[in-house]
Image (tube, rainbow, N blue to C red):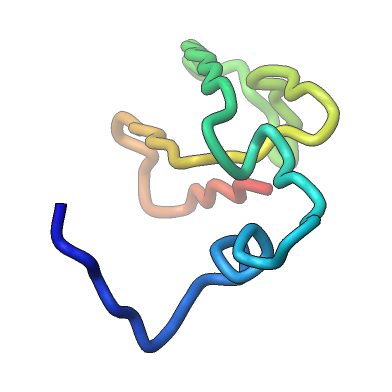
Length: 82
């Protein structure tokens, strides 16, 4: 394997390059990836400012990505994800 010289290292690469370094957390390197899926049928019965629970994340979890698809929401609807 050819040697690669870098000019910039990520914080994590710099951390493990130091002798006696603290190990990275499992969700930073080679950790398990878990996923959840959800479906919510909104129909016409969802009130304005409703809060919809989509899933539960374990403590320390990180979101790696996501996708939410909507049907026709009309012209006066807004979805706030957070």
